[in-house]
Image 1 (cartoon, rainbow, N blue to C red):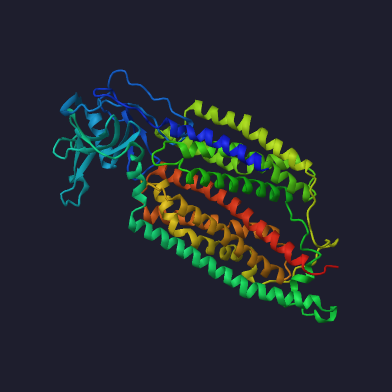
Image 2 (cartoon, rainbow, N blue to C red):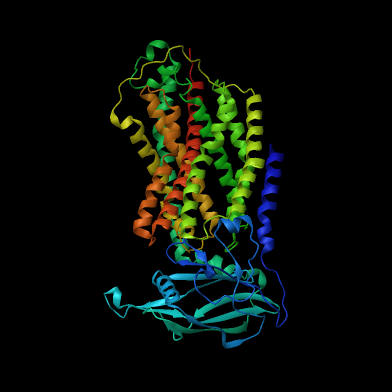
Length: 589
């Protein structure tokens, strides 16, 4: 098993590591052409709604070439084309005109709508990112939007730092005094210019990305992150203390009582969990769905661990275009065998017979909703002609990966799981007829228990969630993966602990249907995260429009569903370990 994991890790590193090798390591001589690519434009507050750079009526140079992109870059919405500016190495230019154009009424209207929505542009120079706004709105303290004035920047100033023969840093500044008035629908003459200035720096080439990494490691940011860690640790300590002082004390009393003779253990209400030993290991209903959920959750947990491993070794450095998406696709495909093995083996332990149907259910349980969501959102992106719409060739590649890698590994894992012939380890024999569950108060039903189970793990991670959302659905850079990994470990521990505690109280109330309950309670944190999505969208972000809204809530629904399966698996595994332990510690007859 260890060799298999090492082999899997090597394949993953080789498949994602190529992105780092793609990072420019070129040395240049004075006058050499340095690659400059225009990537995309879009509303600043709508990160998913991006368009090709030349969808706006900028001057299109002759012989525009599209850069060949990797799978992850396409999934990220990157569409790089050669830019109209010529930034040769160490060649300075002062207000050089690269284009004179008469903007038609329609072009003026298109630019004005873009400026009104705070459109920004993104370029890459020697694989270094460049950002800037295409224009500005002059409100002059006027409350009526019809009186606003709209201007397009026509002069961009590049400042480039170099160290010997390498490019180290680039920044772009728009000249606030060189503007084109777009307020009225009339033809306008525009003269687009750019300035290039070069400065020498002592920053080594190996540290040129540090300025992007350091933005999320500033002292005031680190203080908030560490406050999040301390808050989470206090939650864990309180929960652990609760289990140690209350739960274990009760169990100790139970074990002492059951160690005595039969007459000394008559109190059914206080220690009811012993009296359902003949039902506690009765297999759950819908065992195929249950096993498929465990298989998918185990795969997603493995996927998360591998993603963290790659992040901690530095693969996902800032602006490593598409590396995360490439890693997600590759690792998910390669770990599908884990889902097949876990699901089929557990399904057979639950005495299931239709293992092929179970395998199909496992393969579709997470991919099915994700596929439906993607089809809808891709249609929306096509309607908007946005770069988020995947080209047909990319869709074919993903289908081939699913057909030639994911499905075969799922089947092989399923066959291995079926042939493992493992038996379910139950310390107590199950009676022929189920014991009747006594009437329980409303707060012991599934929904209130899920609310209690999900709140504590969510409270341990909600501070860090803001930074994750601001990075995924905004333009903030997140690089403190070590802190994020600590928060993830705390999330797993809290989920396991709270599920164990609620399972004990459920069994103490003589409710033996704990299988599904433990899974639902463990996964309920995913529902809290989705509820946080509503809060973040309306209170913490400025996202708007149908496309951005559908992308945000659609893909976050898939992510939260993945969290539900993963944490549900963690909760059930912890509860199963606990239940086996306590029933193994007493004499079951």
